[in-house]
Length: 116
Image (cartoon, rainbow, N blue to C red; front, side):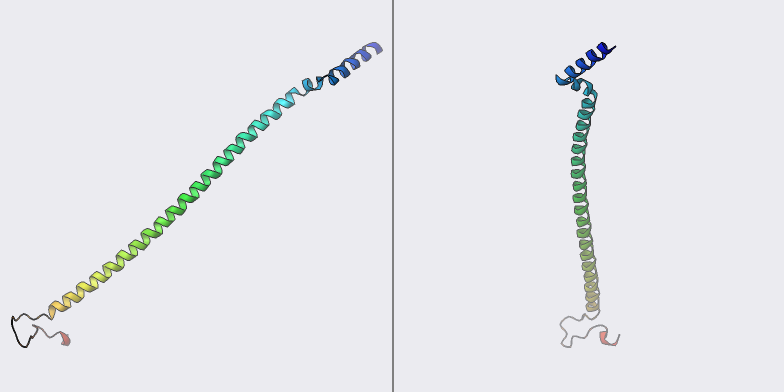
Protein backbone atom coordinates (compact mmCIF):
# COMPACT_ATOMS: atom_id res chain seq x y z
CA UNK A 1 0.00 0.00 0.00
CA UNK A 2 2.89 2.30 0.72
CA UNK A 3 4.30 1.57 -2.68
CA UNK A 4 1.07 2.64 -4.39
CA UNK A 5 0.93 5.88 -2.42
CA UNK A 6 4.54 6.68 -3.27
CA UNK A 7 3.99 5.97 -6.97
CA UNK A 8 0.82 8.09 -7.11
CA UNK A 9 2.42 11.00 -5.29
CA UNK A 10 5.48 10.77 -7.55
CA UNK A 11 3.27 10.82 -10.66
CA UNK A 12 1.30 13.76 -9.35
CA UNK A 13 4.43 15.75 -8.58
CA UNK A 14 5.86 14.98 -12.03
CA UNK A 15 2.60 16.04 -13.73
CA UNK A 16 2.39 19.27 -11.76
CA UNK A 17 6.02 20.12 -12.49
CA UNK A 18 5.55 19.58 -16.25
CA UNK A 19 2.29 21.57 -16.60
CA UNK A 20 -0.21 19.02 -15.48
CA UNK A 21 -1.96 21.69 -13.43
CA UNK A 22 -3.15 23.29 -16.65
CA UNK A 23 -5.13 20.12 -17.35
CA UNK A 24 -6.79 20.42 -13.97
CA UNK A 25 -7.65 24.10 -14.51
CA UNK A 26 -8.71 23.76 -18.17
CA UNK A 27 -12.40 24.26 -17.38
CA UNK A 28 -11.65 27.33 -15.27
CA UNK A 29 -9.56 28.83 -18.06
CA UNK A 30 -12.39 28.14 -20.48
CA UNK A 31 -14.86 29.94 -18.20
CA UNK A 32 -12.44 32.84 -17.75
CA UNK A 33 -12.03 33.27 -21.52
CA UNK A 34 -15.81 33.16 -21.98
CA UNK A 35 -16.24 35.79 -19.27
CA UNK A 36 -13.62 38.01 -20.93
CA UNK A 37 -15.39 37.66 -24.29
CA UNK A 38 -18.72 38.50 -22.66
CA UNK A 39 -17.12 41.55 -21.01
CA UNK A 40 -15.83 42.79 -24.38
CA UNK A 41 -19.27 42.33 -25.93
CA UNK A 42 -20.87 44.18 -23.03
CA UNK A 43 -18.31 46.99 -23.27
CA UNK A 44 -18.99 47.35 -27.00
CA UNK A 45 -22.75 47.38 -26.35
CA UNK A 46 -22.30 50.08 -23.69
CA UNK A 47 -20.34 52.23 -26.17
CA UNK A 48 -23.14 51.89 -28.71
CA UNK A 49 -25.69 52.67 -25.99
CA UNK A 50 -23.81 55.83 -24.97
CA UNK A 51 -23.63 56.96 -28.61
CA UNK A 52 -27.35 56.30 -29.04
CA UNK A 53 -28.16 58.27 -25.86
CA UNK A 54 -26.02 61.19 -27.07
CA UNK A 55 -27.72 61.15 -30.49
CA UNK A 56 -31.12 61.07 -28.82
CA UNK A 57 -30.22 64.05 -26.63
CA UNK A 58 -28.92 65.96 -29.67
CA UNK A 59 -32.15 65.17 -31.53
CA UNK A 60 -34.24 66.37 -28.59
CA UNK A 61 -32.19 69.58 -28.37
CA UNK A 62 -32.69 70.28 -32.08
CA UNK A 63 -36.38 69.45 -31.76
CA UNK A 64 -36.87 71.84 -28.83
CA UNK A 65 -34.96 74.54 -30.71
CA UNK A 66 -37.24 74.07 -33.71
CA UNK A 67 -40.29 74.32 -31.43
CA UNK A 68 -38.94 77.59 -30.01
CA UNK A 69 -38.24 78.92 -33.50
CA UNK A 70 -41.74 77.96 -34.64
CA UNK A 71 -43.26 79.64 -31.59
CA UNK A 72 -41.30 82.85 -32.25
CA UNK A 73 -42.39 82.88 -35.89
CA UNK A 74 -46.00 82.29 -34.84
CA UNK A 75 -45.83 85.17 -32.35
CA UNK A 76 -44.31 87.42 -35.00
CA UNK A 77 -47.02 86.42 -37.48
CA UNK A 78 -49.73 87.16 -34.90
CA UNK A 79 -48.25 90.57 -34.11
CA UNK A 80 -48.11 91.38 -37.85
CA UNK A 81 -51.76 90.35 -38.19
CA UNK A 82 -52.67 92.69 -35.33
CA UNK A 83 -50.74 95.55 -36.97
CA UNK A 84 -52.43 94.83 -40.28
CA UNK A 85 -55.87 94.86 -38.61
CA UNK A 86 -55.02 98.18 -36.91
CA UNK A 87 -54.00 99.62 -40.27
CA UNK A 88 -57.23 98.38 -41.85
CA UNK A 89 -59.22 100.05 -39.08
CA UNK A 90 -57.28 103.29 -39.57
CA UNK A 91 -57.82 103.15 -43.35
CA UNK A 92 -61.53 102.56 -42.79
CA UNK A 93 -61.66 105.58 -40.46
CA UNK A 94 -59.92 107.68 -43.11
CA UNK A 95 -62.43 106.46 -45.69
CA UNK A 96 -65.22 107.89 -43.52
CA UNK A 97 -63.55 111.29 -43.57
CA UNK A 98 -62.86 111.28 -47.29
CA UNK A 99 -64.30 114.16 -49.33
CA UNK A 100 -66.59 113.05 -52.15
CA UNK A 101 -66.94 116.43 -53.86
CA UNK A 102 -64.51 116.73 -56.78
CA UNK A 103 -62.75 120.07 -57.13
CA UNK A 104 -64.30 121.54 -53.96
CA UNK A 105 -62.53 124.52 -52.42
CA UNK A 106 -63.79 123.84 -48.92
CA UNK A 107 -63.14 120.02 -48.98
CA UNK A 108 -66.00 119.14 -46.67
CA UNK A 109 -66.16 115.44 -45.78
CA UNK A 110 -69.53 113.66 -46.05
CA UNK A 111 -69.66 113.14 -42.29
CA UNK A 112 -68.22 114.99 -39.40
CA UNK A 113 -65.65 112.56 -38.00
CA UNK A 114 -64.75 114.57 -34.90
CA UNK A 115 -68.27 114.47 -33.45
CA UNK A 116 -68.55 110.68 -33.44
